[in-house]
Image 1: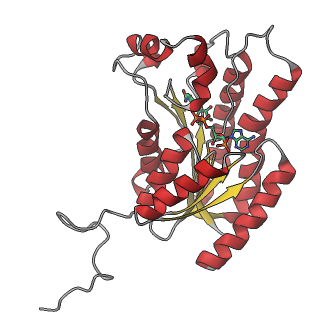
Image 2: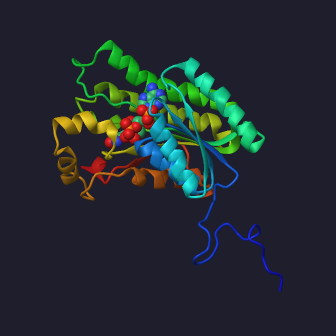
Image 3: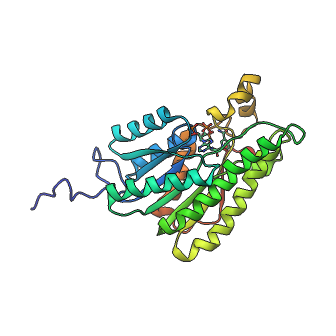
Length: 275
Ligand SMILES: NC(=O)c1ccc[n+]([C@@H]2O[C@H](COP(=O)([O-])OP(=O)(O)OC[C@H]3O[C@@H](n4cnc5c(N)ncnc54)[C@H](OP(=O)(O)O)[C@@H]3O)[C@@H](O)[C@H]2O)c1
């Protein structure tokens, strides 16, 4: 009987064998990848075997820590800075992405794009300034729109676009007037892109979290320290989300197992949509 070498073993391994790496040989780009939900997504995709580009805006230290955790778990990753609200910055980041991918894989191609970066200032219609309106629309909608447009020639057939939306898109909260509107538009962009890219086997889906414990809610929590406990009382599952609750569903949508799911908004919210 011939002994199977380590390199020839199936990726799934056996009991006590290596973790499955179903995304081995694929490349992913995750915006807002240094912190919160995006960091958990990067770690998940890295653990599944993808080479991960961790895109951050200001927090280089957190982005590098995400890269370091992926490396420590046996994965591959690198960090890139970009302002998702500015097209020139997106172009500059993509030029650096191309160079990194060429050096690491020999091709400037990606398989998985996760539009996760977002900002969520609280404000009713009366409290929303033009500056706040522009920032939310630029980061949450214009950035994903044009990054996806520019990523299309780089995306391999059979690839994935995954937009991180929000339950705020369908819940009409008065204090999230422009934020909820930006995510509702992102949902429609998801549907439109799914029809546009479907002929190439590229799926386009949105994951819509409910309340998740991250820095994005810091100002809200500072004003109301019981906010997560209060939210949890209204949820079927009785707890708010953690970043890994979102990362696992992104990992599934990125996998071959989800190749017939497209144009969907998938609510991952502990049940809050149904109250
Ligand atoms: N947490 C929740 O309750 C919740 C609920 C529903 C939906 N979401 C959505 O989930 C996504 C991730 O949010 P999160 O909760 O993980 O928030 P977070 O912890 O505040 O992280 C936000 C990320 O977005 C990045 N970012 C912000 N502005 C940017 C810009 N102009 N250009 C590039 N990157 C920018 C930040 O980069 P730096 O690290 O460099 O600052 C950071 O990595 C967002 O789209 C958010 O709307 C969150």
